[in-house]
Amino acid sequence: MMRHENVKSAARVFAVLEYFAEHRQPARLRDLSGGLGVPASSMTAILRTMVQLGYLEIDQKSHRYFPSPRLTKLTDWIDAGGYEQSTVLDAMCRLRDRAGEPVVLAAQNGLYVEYVISLHSYEGTNSHIEAGSLRLMVQNGIGWMLLSRQPEEVALRIYHQTIADGLLSDAVYSEDAFRQTLDAHRATDISVLHARDLHERTAHWDASMISVLIPVPERHHRLLGIGLHGPTSRMTRREEELSGLLRETVGELRAQMSVDR
Image 1 (cartoon, rainbow, N blue to C red):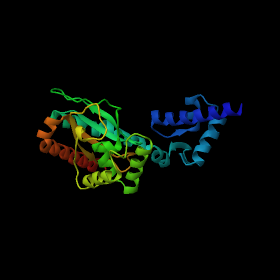
Image 2: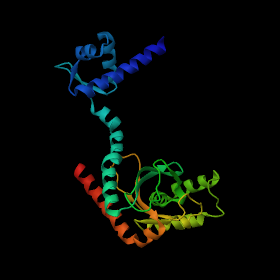
Image 3: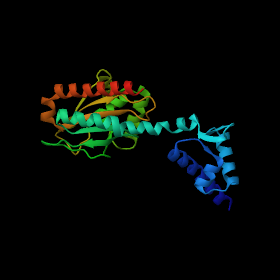
Image 4: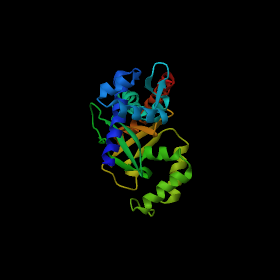
């Protein structure tokens, strides 16, 4: 019985939050009780607890409740996730239009890079990468860029765990070789990776990717990189041009973040 009551109370807390999200104005006890169909005695206990925990504020003169800044701070990191599906996605669409090549957005997922958004090009030969695809961090251009910006001990931990899990052999990709790769990526803002140069064969052996890290909001929960990819012959021929377009995209995102602050 106690467990059922706890669940009911928890559900009512969320109902209170949804009430404020819908009405977007302060509310009295009777507004919440009547609007949610909860007995006044139960609603009083819920509101008192939420005030004590700092998630609601009450105006002592009007006896109206309203969500506190603490509640906003608790959830604002979720809003930062919208950055990827709005600002970054718009920038990726513009980049695809300018470059005429497929574009991906990637982030770290454990030992892997995950392609979280993948935009197919409209024309030409595509080495398409499906959204949700995973690549080893230590065998990926965006992965190397991400790792090169982290403390060396963190990057080495990813490398050693990859080897320990049998995902890659240190006989074909030694720690010294990995360190050299990190050093090379620390010295540049652009990564150019040809799949044929990897130690682990991929599904797109004749493909290449040119990638760059992009700026993210201060509270964003992960670092991000975007890349243009396609057949190695075409990527090699257009390397300077595509690198310039990627840098322009970084500049546009940085400028947009300044405007949004």
